[in-house]
Image (cartoon, rainbow, N blue to C red; front, side):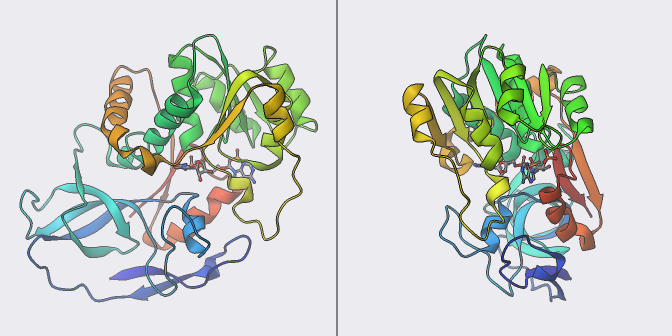
Length: 330
Ligand code: NDP
């Protein structure tokens, strides 16, 4: 079966030559295992961190071994209780067309409740990150202003909508005019800022957030987030969810010092890793599914097709080629 391995640990921006396609045998099925056919593969910015061996909250991929990510797969054969041929499951699985996996650790997903790809996005890690990051760390209150970076991406587009549900004024930052239009037309954002065409970001943020920023949900870090500091309110909260602008750095960037800004405003900044809130995952999914059913939440996906296009889909995240959740359909 076709398999995609990590070929090299990239320095700087990863490329197609950091991935290696091989063919591997499918082992025989043992008790408690299922044979799976991959259907939808999630590609995510955090996988960049796992390509490096720097210490992190999640173990690095091994060179010469398959890459793993969230995958929705069909059960082709089962030697595990409660799993049957034709079931669909979600798991952290290898980038293989077919594979044998332990049933333990897989979650059954229901095609009749939501499209299968949604379990990688709004009803999966992406949705939980948006909901728990915003509510647990951002502590939003109705009437406040929420600013979201990476706003047209998978997490950001959900964060903004939840902000609107909770009664905040919501402003998004993204990389193209098309994305800014989408934020307003589809996701209900009040304002949007295209960071690629804006010369003075701190001024633009000030204009889009006339009452200042109470909650900043940060997906990108770097210069964009530095510009936000000039606009934070007293007792504001920053959710450090991601820093995609920094993931391919080869040198430490020249940054401004954040401390004086936080001191002056009694403002806080806190990192967030969705895996640290596992006990809250079921409640988060329940809330997201309810809002989805009530039509209060919507989502967009960028779906690429074909096993051979998984690495390129991943690389495209760093060029902003996705709107909403990037998924590969096999
Ligand atoms: P996205 O769907 O947001 O995809 C990445 C987007 O980032 C691109 O579409 C692009 O949009 C933007 N981007 C890329 N490079 C840059 C750059 N140099 N500067 C500014 N923006 C850039 O991915 P996700 O929604 O899956 O993830 C969003 C963030 O959340 C990531 O940082 C990720 O690591 C983090 N994350 C954190 C989790 C946690 O538990 N802490 C869990 C899941 C995700 P544009 O066109 O606007 O530039």
